[in-house]
Image: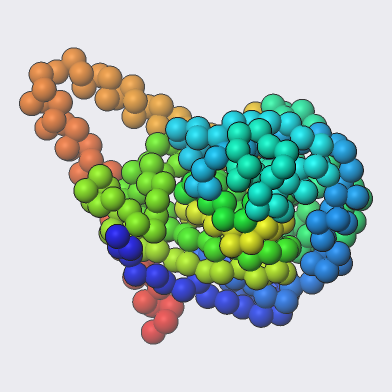
Length: 326
C-alpha cells in the first residue's frame, strides 16, 4: 500500500553562491535548485554525443534483470563495457546485445583510476565531457571530494541509502524522481549499515515493515538542468523516469580528519561514528555475560540514555528555531 504522505521539497530559482550559503545551506534540508548555470552539457549531452566524446574507455556497470536494484541482496551483476556501448545500451528499452535478458537495466556509478584509493573525478576519467560541465561553486575548492557520473536505464530504481558528505545531484538530462527521508527517521527505515532494507517504498509490505509508515517522505521530480542539494545523512531513493545522465558532486563539510582516509566512495561513516559503533558492539558483547533478563534490562537502560541525549539535543534545536522565528 502507498503508506506515506508526500511532502514537497522546496524549490529555489536562479540560486547563486551567496544565496545558497545564506538561505539554503544552513537549513540542512534538501532543496531543488533551478536555472543554475551548468555549461553546455544540458543541451549537448545527447546519446550520440556522449558515445562519441566518452569513447571506448571501459567502465564497470551494474546489470540487472529487475528494474528495482537491491544492493543488500545483490540482485545484479557487475559487467564491463566500453563507455560508448554502455551509453547506447542504457538508452534502449530492448537490447539486441545483452548479458542477462533483452530488457535488462544498466546503472553506472563512475569510479576513480584506482578504485580502492582514488575518488571519481569527471575531469580525470572523462576530460572531454568534463569541459561541458561547470561544477557550481557552492563550496571551497579544497572541500571538493568527487564528481561522479550516474547514468541509468529508464525505469531503474536504486536502493535507499545515506551519504556522509553533502552533495549536489545534478540531473543533466532526463527526468528523475527522488524520495528522501530525514536522518531523524532512521529508526523507521530498517537499516543495515547505510542502506534501508525496505526496497519497495511505494507499495511497502507493512506487515514486514510496520514502522516504515512513521517516516516522513519528501519527494521531488528533477527536470533536465535541475540540481538537488542532499545534505549529509539524508536518505534518498532515485527512480529514473527516463534515460538520464547525472553528476553527483560531493564535498567535505566536516574537518578533513573526520573522514576515513581509505574511503574512495565517500560513504564510510565518520571516524568518530565508526569508533562509537564499534564500542557499542563491544558493549553488547559484554552484556552477553549476564543472564537474559539482565541483558534486557541494561540494554533498555542504554537505549534510554541514548534517547535522552538525542531528545535533549532536538529540544534545544526546536527552542532555538522558535526563538529565531519569534
